Amino acid sequence: MSDVTARVNSSLNSVSGTLDLVANAARNGAADARVAASKALSNTSLFLSRVVYQTTYAVSYGVVFPAAFVARAIPRDNAAVRGLIDGAQAASQSADAILGRSLEAPAAH
Image (cartoon, rainbow, N blue to C red):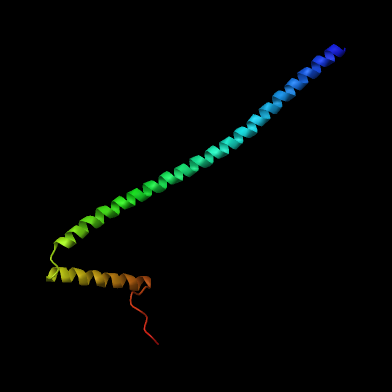
């Protein structure tokens, strides 16, 4: 009987060792999956941030550069340019008034 008991105990120890190995692998795999998911989220966030930055940069450059180029090419001392400047200033002041901002210094009391 002791030979049978020894074999049963050996089999149980082998099964127990295998189950411990599987449990450790599952724990380590879950930890590795968390780390990988965290890295993937970070990389995705960085990628999307970069895409948004580059898109808005290209749009603003595409709008501002031609406008600045044309504005520099037009002589300043004529009625059309004075009208554009005065109109731009009036629009800016109206927008500031609507938003409740003022570019003028507050009056001293």
